[in-house]
Amino acid sequence: MYGNESFGRRLRLSGLARRGGSGLLLVPLDHAVTTGPLGIGGDLDSLVERLAEHGADSVVVHKGAARRIRPGRFRELGLIVQLNASTTMAADPDAKFPVATVEEALRLGAHGVSLQVNAASLTEAAQIAHLAGVAEACDRWSVPLLAMMYVRGPAVRDGRAPALVAHAVQVAAELGADLVKTALPDDEEATARILAQAGVPVLAAGGVPRPDPDAVLGRMAAAMRAGAAGVAVGRAVFTAADPAAMVRRLATIVHDRAPVAVR
Image 1 (spheres, rainbow, N blue to C red):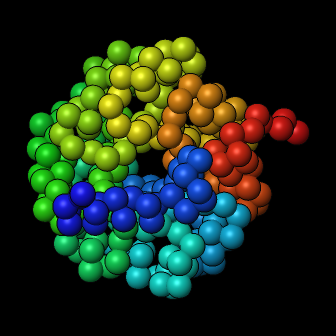
Image 2: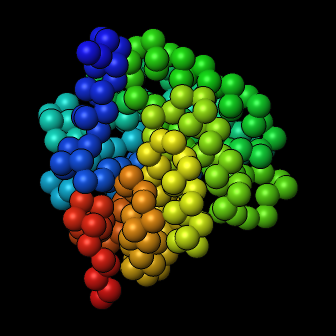
């Protein structure tokens, strides 16, 4: 028998993966605070509708953006509300500041919350403390927590170095995250070792879009082969000439676990 808290958390987690549990296809759409308008003509609701129709499981948005999406969209999608942010205009873009709470996310009807931690940044201590505090609130309210863990800072030469990525993932797992999103190494064997010892499901981050979408798709397919629980691809989706087609191809990789069809 599970207690009420465990049941509530499990229920919300099930609301994040809508395609049968074969893998989680998450589309983060929280970039506008960081870098400015997404370039989708301001029609966030229409974009979310297409993502739902073509295979996405869940989206990540900030609290204000969530209010611009029709509630009915979330009959087919999970809603994750982002709790911290920063802008590229800041003196220290690697710093992250709280902008919402678990309680606010619940009032919006969210299935889960997320926050980003830039390990090795100058404000690492504050960001890890925020992660720990949010994890406690998530325990109190039975809300799943997605930790977006990156290794970024003035002394970091390679944020995808296996030892650094493994350490960042472990920070999230040890402090109570249910899911982790991170930039995995290009080395598939190194990625497999990180995922095997993670202790929590890990999603492969899509990263910066590339001129050839097959490059991103290839990395996501490699991550799935190595044991990733899914992918979190935002910019490569909403900047694509056809976001729906990009999501369909990602869905094939994540939900069907099929190889990439190179065009």
